[in-house]
Image (cartoon, rainbow, N blue to C red; front, side):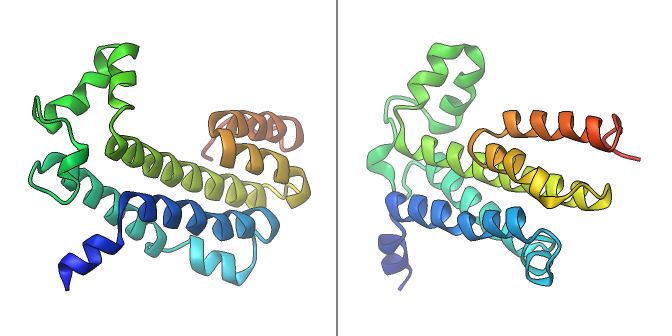
Length: 168
């Protein structure tokens, strides 16, 4: 049974589930940030748990050379040490991007953090009474570009709510 589940959850399938899975959450954050459904889905541990479990599984597969995705991993060195090469320079980061499993781990990382950031922006806007239509564009940018959307929201927040501090 376990082998069948691993066969079903190929890297491509995990990628598709992660990408498609966050879209309804983002639509709720953007268009209905204060609804009970949004609060029920976003403000709990279930979604972060699923993303963390997926991330952890993929990291395990990369660290364990005898794992399911062995053929994707580089066999000339230990995968655990290869991950730390990204800190040595841009060329090392680019070499890691040749590893499909690493790119998927990187992508799940991005999706998780941008979803968390989008949730924070939506909740902060509600707390500061910033209209949801003003926040649509920064949230959309956050979904696609992360830091650019955050910057735009913080700039609008400064203009509208005149708040510079992130936490009160």
